[in-house]
Image 1 (cartoon, rainbow, N blue to C red):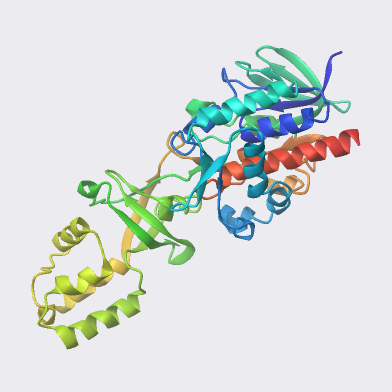
Image 2: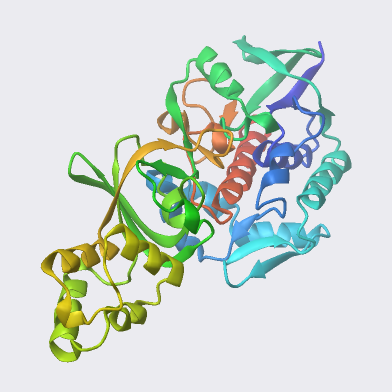
Amino acid sequence: MNIYDLIVIGGGPSGIFSAINVAMANKKVLLIEKNNRIGKKLLVAGQGKCNLTNGAELKDFFSKYGDKGKFLKTSLYSFTPENLIQWFSKNGLPLELIPESNKYFPNTFKSSDVIDLLEKQCNKYNVQLMTSCEAINVAHIDNLFFVKSSCGEFTAKNLLISTGGKSYPGTGTTGDGYTFAKSLGHKVIESHPCLTPVYVDNYAFTDLSGISFKSVEVTIFRENKIIDKNIGDLLLTHHNLSGPAVIDLSRSIRKKDTLKINFLKVPKEQFNKEIIEFVSEKGKLPVKAFINKYSLPERFIKKFSTLFNINFDKKAAELSKSEREALLKLCDYNFTVTKLGDFNIAMATNGGVDTAEVNPKTMESKIVKSLYFTGEVLDIDGDTGGFNIQAAFSTGYLAAQSIVKQSFG
């Protein structure tokens, strides 16, 4: 019987990196990928430019994964953003930091170059790549793993499932790993699209598509309770709310939630006080003179005045009570969520293999010995900006080190 030291199901960044690092220890590794090439999802990362990691300090990474930062602590420390930057540079593809966004990209700004490098590393260390090969089912018998696939049956001492979540199903991430995990006794948390735009009821800003706001505060309310909040850039599109302020919160957003958006950089109470002071001290000036100091986009101001029937050219002292109350909506604008962007446009998946059943110090299953999970197949998802790909490389690296150490000494 031909027995591999490791079979990896799923050729995304975490699976590829695990395969490379185990193969570097002179182990026999097979990577099974349903697409005709590994790394297909990387082609859409960073709009095809491949945002690989972020320039934030490591201590600031942990808050970028919702409540899963603690689970990822060992992974991120074992293979840090700096380690990732050094690895790519050492292997001929330096990364470049874009200061405005704090994002790292390959200096060629081509996802295809990242995939080329990963393929070269697989070939260098003799990882057997089985592409256009779909895993069908897995079994664990007598301390060995048996994988049935569209291109044959394979056996290994260790199995790593890195099939991703459900986002961008056109790249092959259709939730297959959840089925494999369940068949091996694991619990799978219900999945939802995340890092995705949010659709709201009575959306009034279609004609403002492309307008963005800096440092907007967005708060999620459900049954009058605060669920989560975030401060970031907001983008108005033809059909929905987008930009990091919203999409980084989408892991927590559900249908019928209320999103309260503060378009200004001041609390509602302070804004109200500033209105009163302006009316008292400069009441003869037009309302526009007051609003302009908040640097809101001109088209948005015009739209807002139309929606709430406020004449910004009138004297501030002539503002009615109802007009003042309407102005306060600039820092307390309510939207009712109708739906999230689906998996076809979501950049990540919220949900997946329950992390409570995976050892965060090794990425090994707590239920089945020598079974590992890495990347987005797990119930982990990060904010935009390279945090998810960093987590993929970090969990992949940690799993590889654990496999080599625990299985082969």
